[in-house]
Image 1 (cartoon, one colour):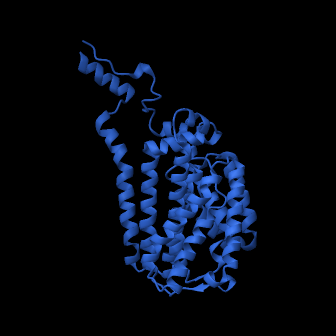
Image 2 (cartoon, rainbow, N blue to C red; image 1 turned 180 degrees about the horizontal axis):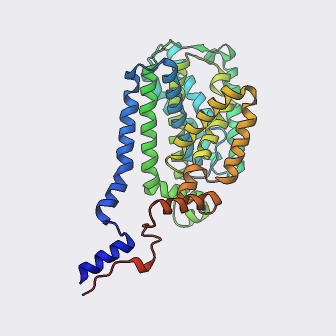
Image 3 (tube, one colour; image 1 turned 30 degrees about the horizontal axis):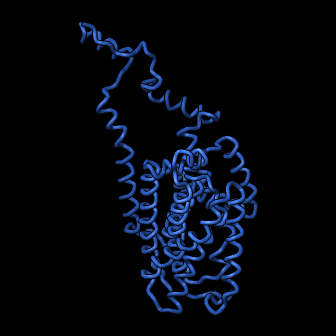
Length: 359
């Protein structure tokens, strides 16, 4: 009796075998990700041109930068409009040590990361006590001030004349360098999103005073993640300075850095793991495509594109897919996902379809 009822209920409700299907759903993205990484690691061995390798390595570099910016701006809500200062400082540490101290590139990268983290500690201790737009403006002021200081420190930085680093034109080397860095940073973001440390950072973003009332040392957490983000950005700046072989204040402290890294992260989804990855890839793809076709009108077309994204996907692409029920597009995506699953989602399955054993 019980078996026939179970079979009939299965026919009506299509209740899946829980163990096997859940494992398949859980491991399919992991398998796809591993296969994608293997494929990307083999690309340089397939005879790709230097221009293609440069495009891909640039994308990986921006994934690292946007993910590191997401650590402070996405997880804590402290939007940093001066984060490019650490990129520039990291590049100048490598440039000065290689040109004036005759050090190797590999030995300068850790020093650049440590120096950027130390500067973040000095700057962040007073500025992270500010909140909202005041912190953003203060960081922007720090960016502009440091750029002028680097320009005036001619004996050390050569000022506007810049520094010429030893040339390195091995595109395969930079491809693997940025690929490994991107994988490591995204993996760290995945861990952070699931750790108690990350949960505390999100609590600061949601209600900092409430987090303090619950005993969270918000100052220490903000400083820690701020220094970590700065160290990663400084290391990337060091690698990029070695790649371009010539640096000056206008190159290493670009205003466009501040805009690009924010757009990439917001486009993908603040406070998410895959948001910076998807946002970076989409931003670069749209920018290069529109720029090639529209020329000088690129900014107009891309500006309109961003307005549409902000209006219909205020939580970014990944944020809308994961938790965008508050928007029309988010509710539509959720409805389509439920319809695509055949109505078998346990969270929305009607009680009448539940299988009961009959004795």
